[in-house]
Length: 125
Image (cartoon, rainbow, N blue to C red; front, side):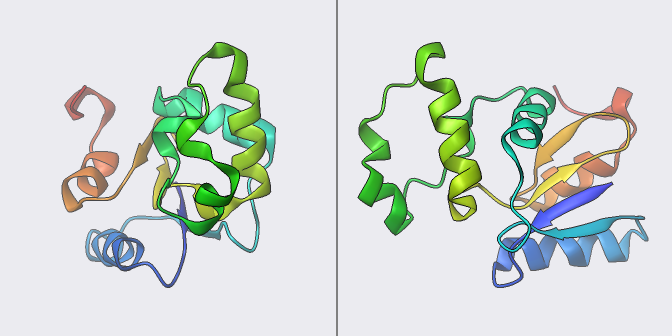
């Protein structure tokens, strides 16, 4: 299991606390310092079953600078979104947990963190 975090983020700190309390085995990726590549983002989005605009932090200053709120959200612009997330990792929602079983979760709530720890058959769809 890997968790993508920003150490300054309270939701990331909360997720790490839960993982530690549950004695989960995980590695930490400081994704602002070690940004995911386009192929990594593409894979994680597939694992999340989400589109890039679903994991984009539109409230970030760079989102406003780029005008992301007005970008089309369709198949034709999907790669542009992913390339932008790779170039500006601060735009990526956090934390993201990628589990060893091939699933992934945007773990912004305690329930989402615990869901990532549950066996696949016990996870909410």
